[in-house]
View 1 (tube, rainbow, N blue to C red):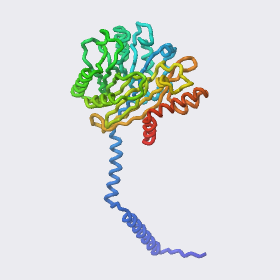
View 2 (view 1 turned 60 degrees about the vertical axis):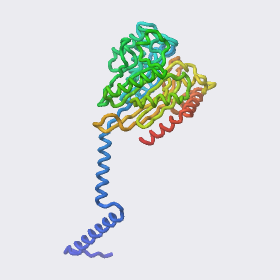
View 3 (view 1 turned 90 degrees about the vertical axis):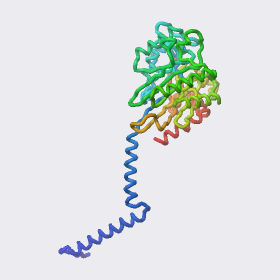
Length: 402
């Protein structure tokens, strides 16, 4: 094969010019083969840049809500309360605030006691705080189980833990309902805890944020909530409600749904309810979020699980959900314009030494168990997902959006 070389550069320059022309023609054909004009391309680039700027300008507040923190005999007799939280501590510490309903007095001067009149010592509260809980609801039907000593002891326990927030008890009988204003990274969180149920209607009830569940009592509460909304600038208003609904009932009554809608109309953004000791469904309506009952976070009510009948009513007291809410907005704005939620299924497990701990009810956890317990917890997971269809739907949605 022979080749010729041109040393005068004339042919090379000619070929180079032709290549340049061909490249230009190809580029023009690509541009005109698309529907986008050069201006459209520029606008698209600007739009992508704006989207990135919008994302960077978003602010987020992440809140986790749990159910009842209880203390039956097996719970408060544990030697190391921190074990309760070992499996979920990291998760609870991965948010801005975690909320729990503390369903007992905290009085170090009194002996610890179980149902019907609960009491724990401050070490039990401290374990919950160390386990990831930041905000506590103190208004419930057991608030005045230990009368004035229990109420004063509880307030004292929180006074010595100023980084923890609470609502639900009065320091004096004449004190009005006073919501807590929690300030965090530019967010203003208004928090109020109220109970519609009390076991003891003696003089100590005046030290609890109690609201009668009758028409008159609810009208007064609505009026107070509306005034709080006007008087206290805030971004989100969270109401903890120990709701007047029968214990262990797993169906949300229409009257309860209607009541929550009225609370939203009064200015409440998030209604976080408890009392039935079993998990109820949750509901998001626009920018309002309703948790109808969050069940038990920790208790001794299912201390000895019924492996012969995992579907028995009492078995539902040992399973619940952690609901993580993410509120977001543009930087510099007030309030929030978006709310998202992710449910996490949890269960109470009684260990061989009698300790009761909280575990995430996952397939991985189930597969780690001996056969009898593997069968029991697999059935419990199936039953919870069956009667709480949003559990699977919301969890799958969250995975897809990641």
